[in-house]
Length: 188
Image 1 (cartoon, helix red, strand yellow):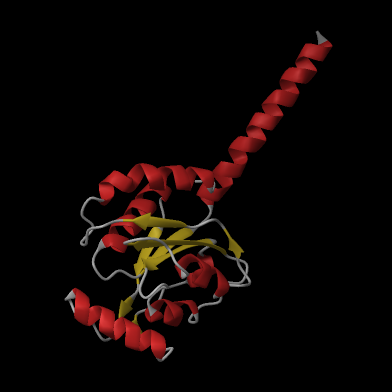
Image 2 (cartoon, one colour):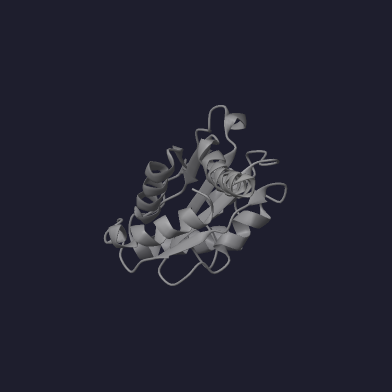
């Protein structure tokens, strides 16, 4: 009888530890910071925020990008080639309160928009958990890696690239299951 109680106590302790690990990640103060041009990244960022209970912060450049695709790609390419740091509007209030920061953007010219670098260089991510995500037509290229490299003193969780062939957030509800599986995998 004593042995059965000991085994039962041990199993309950192990189960409780597993539950606490996920619960702790969910109980940390979290924000989703994102840049979006077409609306795709906005859709995924808002979905992540809704699923995790996170706050959101949209990264907006002071100078707007062209609304048409081809002119926007030309500006994005010129910024990348110049290693530009476009000015952004606003800032995250009380950034120090956040433990976990999801950081997302579209893939532009095989990496994130240069406005992401402006954002990443504006804050001290030391001791924070950074979780990158991106939206793309084909794949993440260097985008997720660039976010990780720009936040070297942070803990990092595996990122996700949500691939879509449409603009404006259309059809991304079909990707929610993929995002759900990823969030579960990283502890949310």
